[in-house]
View 1 (cartoon, rainbow, N blue to C red):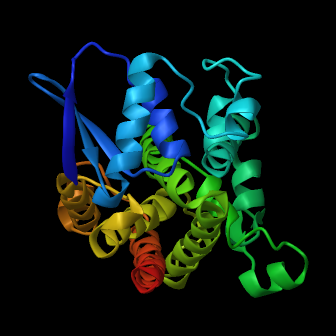
View 2: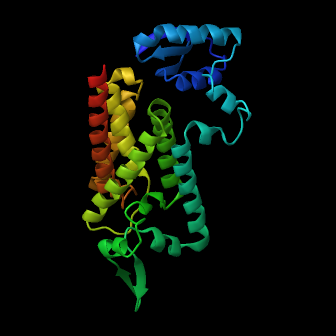
Length: 285
């Protein structure tokens, strides 16, 4: 990242941020003691960035033509703003919230419907179906649907925070199609990895979150001109957390029953996609 300028600590940069993402200018604004610092990912976009900054300081319109007209019909504070800017991320997050609320009303019936295999109770014992038979029988949602299950407020909140943090960046820089690809492949890959470990009662979007982490990190390292950015300490924290939950110490302090294989499976999918698309970006330069 390249330091561009320092802004006053109390200046509102939301409009500038939206415009920079809309113009596909990779950037970062950090909070520091003396104010806000604007960083640029690709120095080749320096001139375009400076032009936007001049227009922003003059109070002129910043959004690209076409997109500005589409966005002007709704206020900035509209609840539909996240859906416009990051539709796949917003819809995925909303589905998780809906499923969580439905679980509070219908309980185990939701889990049975969305678990990776059909579940039931026969003569007081848990009956577990076959994934292959379920999919061939038309229940094609089961390889993906466990990603939308969350078993507590903290589980839900942390997964949604990381989904929103990384997902918006992917959609802003590479579009909704790329984000949808990551959600589908990582969600299914993480679930199948956990199922292969012999577990059927699991859920959560954390496998997708780790895939997004791996993807964004590799894109930022191998193709810095792509505009992706992730703090190295965040990478260390999330990878450290994944390793910690694999140890016996996690269970001793109340973090047992973690879908470790799903985390690892999602991370592998994200790294694979990140390696491929960063390779493509390097070839196109």
